[in-house]
Image (tube, rainbow, N blue to C red; front, side, top):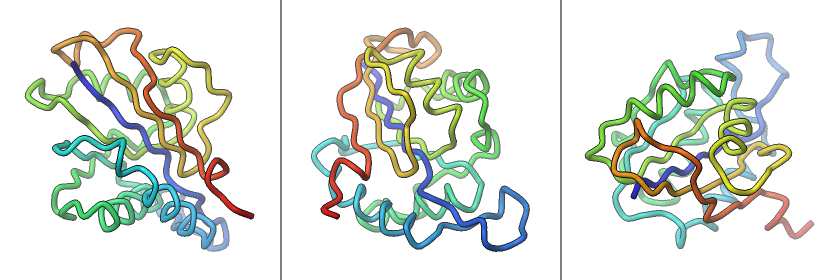
Amino acid sequence: MKNLILIRHAKSSWDAPVHDKERVLAQRGVRDAHLVANNISNFIPKTNLIWSSTAKRASETAVIFAQIQMWPLESIVFKDELYTFDCSKLEKTIKLCDDSYENVILFGHNEAITEFVNKFGDVFIDNVPTAGFVSLSFDTDSWSFIRKGKINKILFPRDIKND
């Protein structure tokens, strides 16, 4: 069994004139990342491989989750190939994961995440929003052979906001 948790980076800021990869989280993004990270403990396996896009907004989201979940920051593997909006590139990276890892948590970007979830999940999701959390499981022993899986948990900021 392989388990994959996809987390879209939290809401980023467009205020500063920087390259897309350098955009930081907006205040709302920081709040939403904290909100979701504080509500996922029951859905996170004990041992994980943690991957994050090298984009600033994704890495900041990963760090917030790590701090709240008490994952060592040095356990986050930052991968340039996860700075993609293309589902096929995301799929290729996931399928190259070492089979010794049963559980992978990945911080990345849309459209890649929404398209991946709809290709491999059993529930259609119109759009995985910023700070959105989707947990999938695959009945296989090899990442390279993942096929249609089962969505175990979907958690979006709007599901837990009180305002």
